[in-house]
Image (tube, rainbow, N blue to C red; front, top):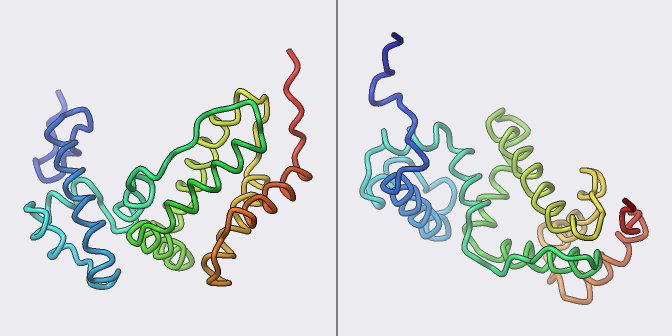
Length: 197
């Protein structure tokens, strides 16, 4: 019979309500701290102290910084997630509105930018970035499923890319009109006729 790993190496059971509460508390504290102290100030020691946990607990939940930042990015506050639908234009527009809203949350914005910045030299961040893109593409395809359209990674990049350029490079506002233009252009690149049975 194989022996159990030592307590400090056991992964927390995600189905355990106590584990869920601990994770939620740590993520909430991380979201509060990021805008306050910045990325470099968000140390394991500070986060553990403010969340009332040990550093060992943090490492059991998030073995590296990129894993924590990924959860801060993907599990941010509710900003109005879109519903699935048959109208591709409406779903894509609602998706971009939701993404824009999420990226206005300071902690989410900081975490996402940090992962992207570190992805070139940190394998954990590169893997985290790929995981975020894969997760969001799958989520968008779920929203698009009633329309019969399923998009590729390249088509997904053509949809969200202009928004990221507008926000992060141009440092300009992504107005509703801007999002409408992005979606109109994007629709010319995808075959959005309903799937036939």
